[in-house]
Image (cartoon, rainbow, N blue to C red; front, side):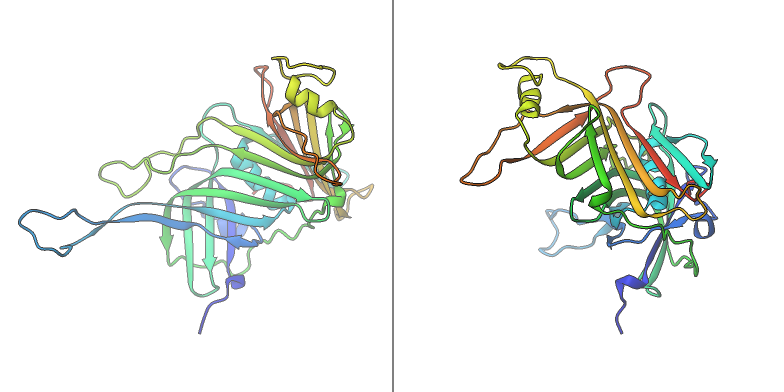
Length: 337
């Protein structure tokens, strides 16, 4: 008899103390519905080199140090996404609840340690259940096409795993609605960007190989330089954006050296409204990037094709004390798990 992947589950919970599995993960954490993915084992079998005086066959091997990591791929629902955004960025303001809507504001952490997650992961229903301690969100990717769903991929690294854990029988699933491209808008400098698709990547650049003598496990998980990049597929309406990206300003007729940086806002909302909200208010995610610059790109005419471009952008923070981005989640859930 085989095991079906759909019988599994993954539960995420912000962890209060480094090194200690959050005991209420199964009851208070948020169970995220996954399209695919899991945290795989990263471990080598240590095989010795041939020795003078030895035989032609390998005499033995030992197991080396170990870490766990992998990608969770999912349709983005706001409650589980808020937990991932908090783990990825690091700071959450006190939630604000009014007229049946709770607003969670999440911003990047400048210094210190990013939040750890405890993760309960079940494989195949009755096949195996793992508890992961000190898990971090190494990177978070969001994307959507005009005629598709808002989707995400979270790359997670975990320092410790135990097998044979007890599966939570009735976790709190994130059953908030999904979002489609017809309910997603992008503005740049307060002007609608004619985007056919978008992507956002937040990369914390953790290293997963800081092993120490005398231990099987990663000694430290510290985020390095943060990178926040964006991508868009657009149908060109004029050459202003190309000039800005390639020459520096939209009015330039020759290359300059200074880049133009302007605010970019991505707003994603659902058709469904939050139960009990007055007036009826949609579940939503708003990503605001105060300073975004576009990478140079080439216009690519071909035959009778309509000119379209795939462009890349980078969020920057030239002014100390400001945030490179802000995520605002509106939902009916009072807390971020």
